[in-house]
Amino acid sequence: MSHQKVAIDITKIDASPAYPLGMLYIADNGNHYRYAQADGAVTAYDVYDLIPGTWQINAQADAAVNPADAHLIHACVHEGSSTDLADDECAWVFVGPGSFTADTDSNGVAGANDIIYVSATAGKLSSTATAAFIPGVMATGAITGDATGTFYAANALYVVDAA
Image (spheres, helix red, strand yellow):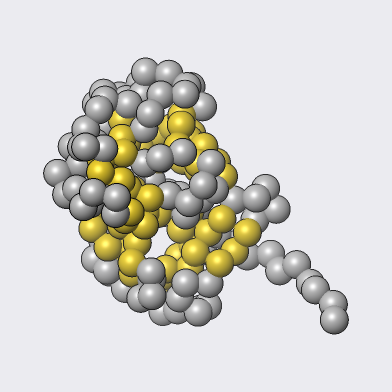
C-alpha cells in the first residue's frame, strides 16, 4: 500500500462542502486543521466553539459562557484567510496543535508563557484571568491590546472552566 501526501489550500473558502465535514488535515508544519461549516457569520482570527459530529463552527467563545466543571468545549480559529465566513460557508479551521493567529481583546497578552483565557469580549483571547481558559496555549510574545498575534497550542484547542 502506498501513501500520498495531499496538499490542501487552507485559505480556500467554499460555498458548499468540497470535502467531508470534519476531515482532518495535518499541514507540513504539523498544524492540525478540520474542515468545518459556519453556523452563522464567522470572523477571521476569532475563537469559536466547534461541534464535533456536525462540524459546525458555532458561537464565538466567550468567558461568560462557561463549560461545566471538568467539561471541555472544542474550539477552533478560522485563520487560514483574513476573509470572514458567511453562514453555511466551509473552510479549514485551526484546531491544534501547532502555531496559529488569533485576535486579542483590549487587554492583549502581557508576555510569552502567560495563561491564555477566552476574553469577556466574545471570540478574543487575553492573558487577563476570566472564568474560562484554553489549556496548553501560549502567546509567542507580548501582544498589544486589540491586535492579531501568534499563539502556540501544545494540544487541541479546548475551552475549560477555570473555577
